[in-house]
Length: 233
Image (cartoon, rainbow, N blue to C red; front, side, top):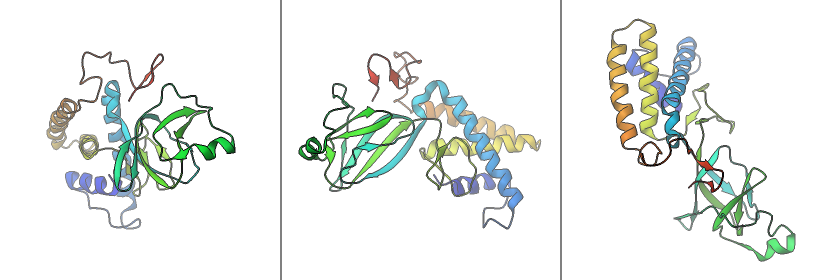
């Protein structure tokens, strides 16, 4: 969700003017962005033991012959868009990450990527892309903010930023930011919003069946990476 949209929701909840441009109300803009950042990190802290919730959704375009892609965070899932259809690209446990590296070998093993492995910190696709493809990558990370200079971080710093998470998560951030802001102003509405936040937060967890918290028979400390099994899908 665009930070500007979250900013306007926060402004509506707290009685501040909505965003118009960078020069009209710079002090208010800085204040609300700071509280959005605090709200984001507060929600991240609340959700950290259920860290499968902390997902960022990236769209990556790979060119012909580009089989290595830099991805920040632990990869949870990869999908490829081919001819307007979306297909899963699974992690290949038994694939040698150093296979087919010479030019001659690469030429023989090109096509639509069917899987990936990790090589020297990069996601390596196989077969090697024979054309330009679009990948949808979900990563586990606390760096959910995507800046307009293609940098991922865990702080809201600019109105042009985006929080790369689902809308319910972003609404939790707005509610938490509004609670913190109104509490500082000793506004009685802070307690009302705090109660709403708690109910929404609990509801969010109950509907998130992908988390290790939701699947209570799993070890909650498992996270997304297991030493013996590697990356978890």
